[in-house]
Image 1 (cartoon, rainbow, N blue to C red):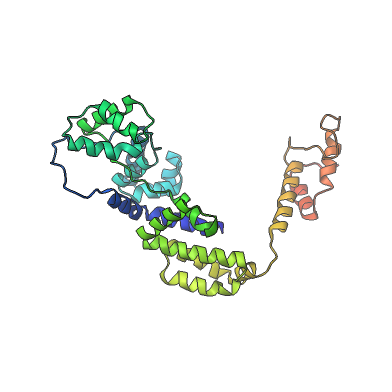
Image 2 (cartoon, one colour):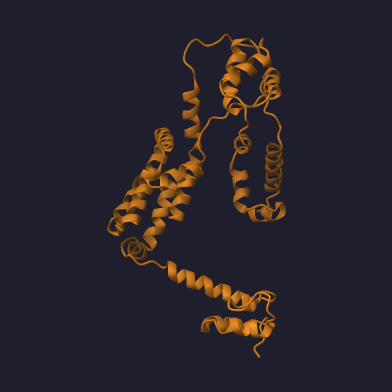
Length: 327
């Protein structure tokens, strides 16, 4: 289920433009447009995260011009190869827009659209105190200075565009993967709006919920048909997930059909690994559970106590290590 959730989340992230477009269309107010107002050309404010994104883009492309490989650039700039590839394949404007979206919403964010409309209607001839009182009656809990700062940015043409209120990909994924009856009415409504905005997210949602139902009700006999549908018209990431399932079809079918699970075995494996690490690695000798934490227990006896709990395979692995001396 973790791999499925990752595929759904990445699909939602790839189609955020669809969600943003629909949110912007819904915020458009009907009626006669206000008279045009002459404002300075808009210029995005330079913040710390946007400046870092801009410098990183320049550094990566400068090294690419020198024919450096992605791995070499990643080592030089202390970045992941995926990050370097994203900066290589993505335009700077899109990267800057993504960087602005990562900034947390301020207390004035829900009221910026209203302030922008009122500012344009009044041709800029409106006081900050008056607008402050208007949005305060609508639930604003911030200060007057924040409103005046936003109006000053409007007059200077350096105000940021109003960001659309769209849910994050992780939040959308949580709504999709959870059982429908556990969703609140507001969450169900938001998910419906997301589904209406993007057909690819809708298809990923339907496939993910069908797979989750198979897992919960142990209907492994439907897996092959699910894979065929996913490979036919699903988004790219969902097709990749279906391809991985086909490679190990018998095991996945058994996992979705039989009531047994390998969770207990995995727990024992982790316990043995932790026990081995406590004996092999120096300075990590633990006190046996039956001994008092303040009792005087010599290190050799403690080590032998843990040594007796190791399996045969762990003993051989520990004996090969130069960190353990068997006496």
